Image (cartoon, rainbow, N blue to C red; front, top):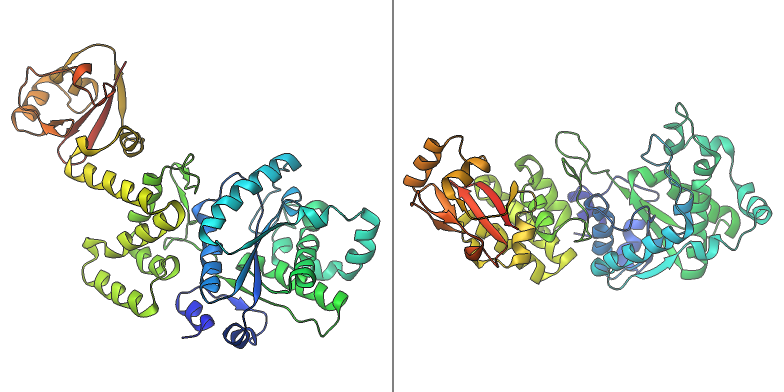
Length: 412
């Protein structure tokens, strides 16, 4: 199966600018580029698809260029937006770009990294308008979806000009890096085709570039992918812990699991089909979700971090809390209800304070029925006292009622 056919099978191909690209990608080793505007100091899982598609090309021998939009990030891409982006300072743009580069290089280790501020900043306004702007027809620019969708609410000249500046990126890379292909999500189609037009008009009809896009990723219910009740799932472990990242993929709904398995993992098509068959026969075993979580956690954070996240997950399921390190406890119990106590406290009273029991009578019943665990050990003594000296690392006592109801007690 050639690359384009595989992308189609994985539902990662929306449109191509020229069907010739299918043969070119099979017969030649091409240089392609994918962009990232540094609007934050971390990527989130919604950005991942760009770099995973790039990795598929990289794994076939093609060479990726990562364009950090230090210049375009100062302008703001209107694609997929209903309102203007907040303008970045140059200092913030460049600093964000450094952080994003480090994240992407883990996925695309052979990528050449460039910052479009380096060439965009060399243009003065007159040169830009005369040498670049004259090649863009206003009617043509207004026909682009990224602009049309904003006309009712309004769009500034700054964001309106974004497609011109991104086109300049493609032309620059075509000339200087022999980059003949730009890839992106379907909302980037207008920017990609505008770049191809600029290449043709400035460099001549014999100058041939290409582009392809993939469908925008949404959940099966139609909502935006990558968002949770707690906000975005970031690649930076200081924003989203590795355990939270792992859990995001483990909790993939069954209705989305097959789609994500095809899009986000790097098994062969045959291996993927086999796992899909296994998952559909026994979805309760969550084989698809486990594979997605494993591959992506290792790819983004490394094997050691994945094994730590897996250990936390197993410990929470089994109740083997003492096997966890303090840092693993902090990660695994980040979103668990918690409270602080300043003195030793009777377990019955503590169960009421933490709302694991509604009354002293209920608390005693839970304890007598072996439904309460303290730091992973069943506790059947209604006179038991929770003490700081017995806490994990003298910091935490973890109460568990039944299989899933936890409270983290912090000792002052």
